[in-house]
Length: 340
Image (cartoon, rainbow, N blue to C red; front, side, top):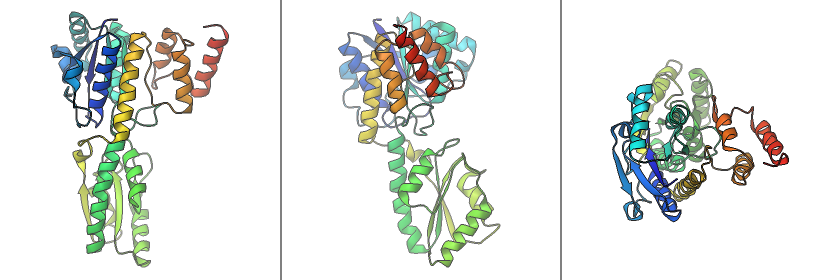
């Protein structure tokens, strides 16, 4: 492999630029050329590609967003669109891809692999932290800290005016941001999509707080936790009890800003590892290693897992079709004992 492509797709996340930088610098160290694909899959279809050298990615480590831009592509959802993208990649001499993004990005990458045999390594980049198999995704830590700073400021106003504030954070189908921000910010209530939300129970809890002498409260609501988000939940609660309350929607402020040290380091590690995986023609999803994930990746790095096995185990609703880590690791041991 002599030339690889890198692109960002879907929602932007702080740390994506750090990942791009790591991909380019690691590729340069291994003697590989890098082509940057602008605007994700939409740009791939249109052939929007630029060569990237070491100097091209200087001074982007601390920047939020993505210098390669991002977009959503309806055309790529079709077989014809993916065929066009594969043709553009072939014409540019790109032999493998580093895909930085979330679940939609990875589903598209899998289609390219399955339909057009394009080797792809996925780097998890989404503030929602909702990708299977990794403890943390690029951008999550920054989003949590951004939202936490806002909640700390809102708490001052809530206390001064003796009000309840309903604060909506991002998370259409995932409550990771709400949960972490709520715990770190001392919220009285945290509403997440993964658990049923009962307005009556929340109303009773807020009234109990008032009886105990607590004059202000913070309620953190993931945007997908209740129909209508934080405003919808407040309206439902006020059918049971009248409270002096305000709604604040943090919105896209959570996506922007300079990435935290944790996100910069995570992005740099994953970006460099993605290039190493492509250079060795190993096809697997890159995860931030927890105990089990680390064992998987270490085994793959030692050649104990054949690329074709990894490709098979990646298919299905989850990255690996093995029924949990125990089965996957047991298979690794079988391969090792069989001598490769």
